[in-house]
Image (cartoon, rainbow, N blue to C red; front, side, top):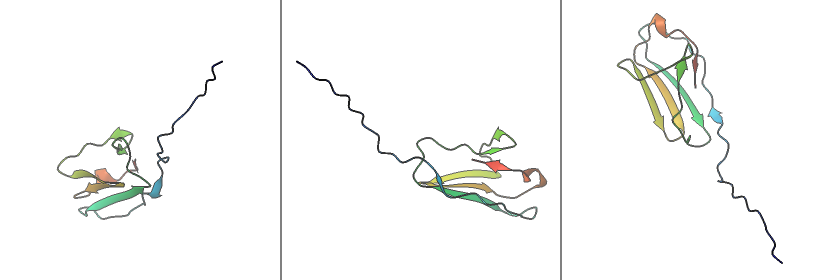
Length: 88
């Protein structure tokens, strides 16, 4: 007689979570702003930054940086329009 056995192999990857969360900031108009956070590991897919429920795209005044598990959103020169809640 034959015997069957099911084998499940986990990918060994830890669940993704913040090790350093985003912090509220108060800045003056014209200031450079860096929103920074860290994860416990490198995300599989590129994280998406949003402001007012819209995905942010890099431009002359907005840079998105990912170095390993550290993520940064850089606002080169803050304006009143940048006053918002940012999510990742």
